[in-house]
Length: 282
Image (tube, rainbow, N blue to C red):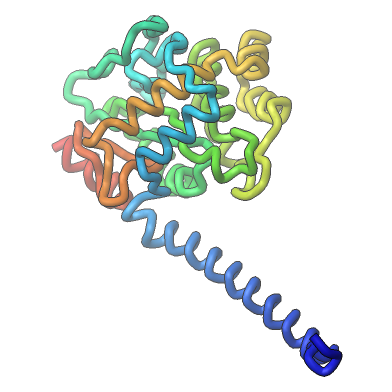
């Protein structure tokens, strides 16, 4: 290449400006896409992940372990809540053994109540948006006894957090709280969504996760040790793979979070959740 072939300083400046412009446009598109998810895309659900890819990711991130025992109070893979007279109470159940499988039916339900199950990844931005829009309304229904709520933690977004396995570690924390301090679970979940790290970062360290758990009121040393040791790492893999293999939970693009099921029916449009609950209650 001769000196005459090289780009001039002005041409290099112009190229740099063009690259910066393209990056700025890409960021604008990303923000518009997130806004669309909240205002319209949340109706379709969902951070979708092809099941086979997610299964591989989960297995790689946890060493492929799928035989670990599960936490207490999650016999169905979910922690379940019932309510009466304005109070919400977690349903207790025994832990699933290392060789056992999740129960296909709720551990307990109020007669005539609508059964709502939420499949959530605490690292999922759309889950955060869904909770912000509907959590209080759903909990009001639980408190009145009209709804039985089950929250099923899964981990499908490790790939969004720079190799840190943040989604899996957050799911483990959910299970630690369910096991040792289930009455604090909903408050801890609120902390995780309020302080959710940006995708593309390394997420939160285990120490930072412990701080969120404590901020939600789960302050026992057992929970702290469980988070630090990732005591339910194997169960995170096992229960997530069970969910990913369940064809009834898959939409047009496979399984994604949040997935909401009302009385056994998966919702295609998440903005219909309160309408679906009201309809089921009738």
